[in-house]
Length: 202
Image (cartoon, rainbow, N blue to C red; front, side, top):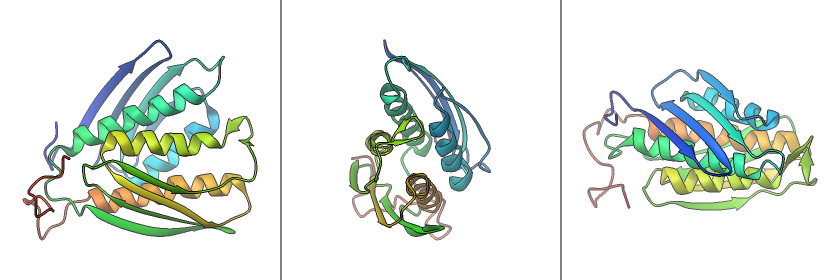
């Protein structure tokens, strides 16, 4: 389903490395049921759902005996594909959004264009390789997969911060809030594609 009034989608993705099922409702209330086997990642995805108001049901099983990489990346792919499917022709959306998001000592900026043209600009550095057992480099891998498969241009910049947990969490929350704004319906153009080209799918 992909109309503005019923913007929901389900994606199932299975490889030799992962098996993932994702359902989204872009017009939800931020309800979530998430289980990937990676605790910190689950916590971040819960922030993504809650602050974007996208209802998310995510079940992932991956080769965690190797590491978390495939599970995190493939979950990003599946969420991105589900968002793109739910958006349909992207008719009536605001399209653009940007936000500076503060969390204690940390400030992170996210700006995006739900353009149909995937691109990631990433200016985020972590001072440690891990948050608990989670590889901090996987934060970028997730957003790369999400942007590529959702068809969004996404810029994320950490302006400052000291705590790596806070830096990661502000990335997820800032992207969530900008997704919410950009994908909401603009009442002044609810039946129009917000582009002079007449399309937002490439």
